[in-house]
Length: 368
Ligand SMILES: *Cc1c(COP(=O)(O)O)cnc(C)c1O
Image (tube, rainbow, N blue to C red):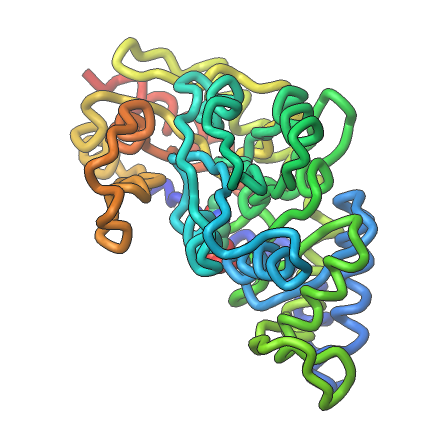
């Protein structure tokens, strides 16, 4: 059987270093807000290419804190609008509505599955304060046009980098997570840089924003027992930071392996019943997922399962069709709806064997 993602095997690859890192924290007697966080934050900021990194409890919180900090700093106010792709994981949208900001859903480009930058300007109003792009599936969603719109209109550019650690925008060689004003990252175990539980981080060049987020995620504390904001407890554990430090050192090597799987898929999947997104530049896609599109998606998924290939759908129901957002259920977003109806994610990971990769291709190509 070809597993969708074999986390056990991924961990086994670096088991000795991971065990050593975890033991170091266990034996140290220091489990929160210590040097492991300090060290990982510095390493991750350097890796992404941003001045500051603030660890927090998970990727959703990272995004929530960015908007909340902008509200605390008077840059945004409840009721303001944030432009965001309509086809994303729900967490991007939740981070906006959690702060009583209003998501303005923009359709993606059907060939890249990323926000369509030609549809952003017409959605800007007097209330628009930010554009939040999502590097969905691990593919860079940033374009020069998006950067230019944000600069010329004075909008904050926020990145949801939960799926794209290590992805590079070819235009300027910067990594995603360092392309805008602030970025939220997730270290959920299944992500390309995954912890052994929940974890997240914000990267930014803005020191005031970073300090505000650090306070908000630590009960709103500015100094010990002095509370400037009504915050929450949303911190990254020392043990997770230590493990993430190990995995970060191997991330580029893992991403390279993912890119090789993807290149093989692109070169060898040939089936008129399927469509693949147009290929991205090599550096601009880290293949957290490998999406394919098929009008008989559910049938294809069953067929692959019957032939021993695990797949997942990212995601079966778009945010505007969810019960929690019933006020948008009647919106018509045909490109988004079609992607959600047709998307299927093939197995991809740094630990797939050549035999597994070839099996996937062979069976996918035989679907009739
Ligand atoms: C995983 C994910 C998140 C949320 O991260 P968590 O750490 O699971 O809270 C946000 N946005 C996107 C696009 C994601 O894939």
